[in-house]
Length: 166
Image 1 (cartoon, rainbow, N blue to C red):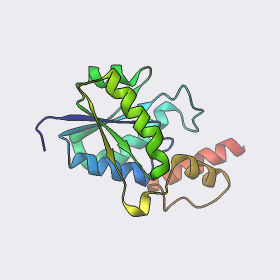
Image 2 (image 1 turned 30 degrees about the vertical axis):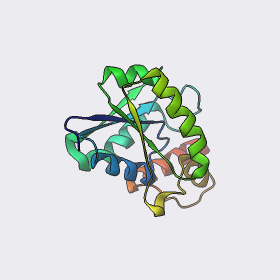
Image 3 (image 1 turned 90 degrees about the vertical axis):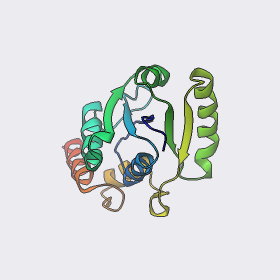
């Protein structure tokens, strides 16, 4: 591991899943510091507020102490990464279908940030099919999501679904 390399793991994390958590775990084995960058999500309609997503992510990364922090960002990811001194951007790949989009995104990011490398990490086999979109849909339809998210996130999803139903 190179010393003092900061990696940024960006996403909307709406909500953070066990797959996301597994990618964070893997990133901590490669980088001295990982910043989970929660996007304000101006292009997506989020189920959870930005603060709720930050709070869930912070709870999820507690086991890593100070080596993983959670921050929010809006605007150009490039500005966030450069301002934090990031040298790597972590992206999770679940399946071949993710690769085309992520490959294009990595190329664009390399053009915007030539000194920042994109590193693709795959989650454990048991998490490769999990997406936040699927988790939200399952929860909204009354299904069980405990296999896909932490207990804390499961409780927050249940509360959110109840509040929408009222």
